[in-house]
Length: 302
Image 1 (cartoon, helix red, strand yellow):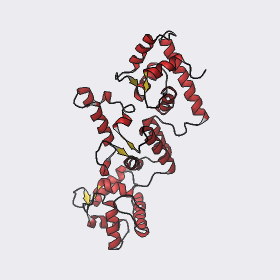
Image 2 (cartoon, one colour):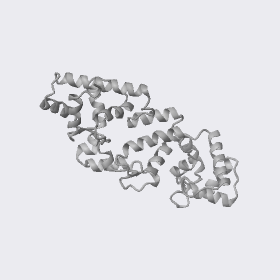
Image 3 (cartoon, helix red, strand yellow):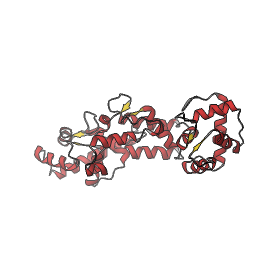
Image 4 (cartoon, one colour):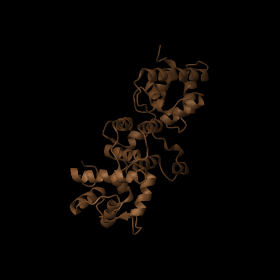
């Protein structure tokens, strides 16, 4: 077993599991509960546990490992190798791995973001998927679009990240495994991921496919109504520009959400990427004008 710091042998892993179970009995292993326990274990109040404080924490839970096992467990928690366990390291050492269902939806979101299939998420990957137009610093002109996106990417780095403006698959998994600790059920976690990233756990189901198809038809009907059933390129360009709120020359996923709202079509965010796929012919994560034009002029379901 190897997650952080160093790997754990079977005996030390058993001690850690017993530690987790004991902490659960003391109030749970949610973020808030663990914060209370961590502060209690932190005798000198420096927001870190040294090996003596960690040993006392284990003893309070009825665990008295051999010193060599204590050292091994300490190294497992001590990600940055400074000889202490910080609060985030404490949380990471106690967290459980993602369930199979959670891992699948996390992988699905990563695949969506990793536009070029390189195994990492870069500024280029997310420029159509994350719209910084409403970010305070971008609006005030203190940061460029690229800088805002890099800041967004860096937010996934966490304690072990290197703030390089790139999200590796490991960093992505670490982020959501940490977050998973505070979300009690698989159902809740999946709904959160669907809402945040506009994806569907079971998008290939017949019911979801039918729903997306009907929404796409309705969008086209409302757009045709806006144009008075005109296929005039000048008119359609004006409509396209109306929905391209950041004037980037394409309609992003957030702008697609805005489009459906302006067309008075109620759509859960988790269906948006299914809708996007029906219009985004080159699968680059955004709708260019020629794709918009083709969508209006050529009924995709005739």
